[in-house]
Image 1 (cartoon, helix red, strand yellow):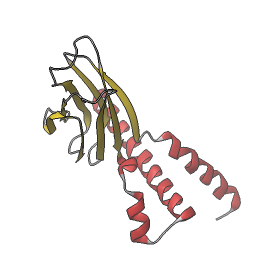
Image 2 (cartoon, rainbow, N blue to C red):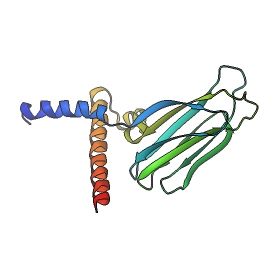
Image 3 (spheres, rainbow, N blue to C red):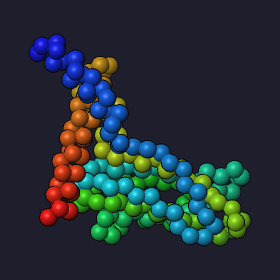
Image 4 (spheres, one colour):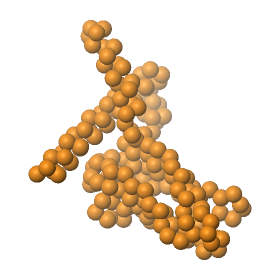
Amino acid sequence: MRREVVLPLFVLCFFAADLVRTGHSIWLNLPASGTKCVSEEIQTNVVVLADFVVVADHTHAPTISVKVTSPYGNNLHHSENITHGQFAFTTSEGGNYLACFWLTDHKHEAGTEISVNLDWRTGIAAKDWESVAKKEKIEGVELELRKLEGAVEAIHENLLYLRDSLAEKLS
């Protein structure tokens, strides 16, 4: 390939990796009563991994419950009376996936909020790159290029998903 083509392609791939929103960690403040939910629109056939933990500044960590549902209301995960946990699934339908958290420990002081740290990863961010590197015996630049290739594929799939979603809404 000619240098005039390779350099712009490399720069595009480098910046494309930053454009793909594939994972994020957030803090949720749960009220003493009520539910706090987060959602993300995800296309079909995408791996989703999440870890969550109650952050308490005292010895007794209050317990929470969590429920994760698909766009059509299918229950993907449900846990009660826990202080930490994780869930993982592969999406079977495109749309808005919802994770809801609520306080189940009624010994907690009324009027104060409980913090929950949620680390939510989808698609390429959910991939175990360490295992890929060991399995395929790659490292350094080759591993980074493999990650960029995955990011470019994810961008392409997202663009196709957005195009199809727009076409559905317009018809």
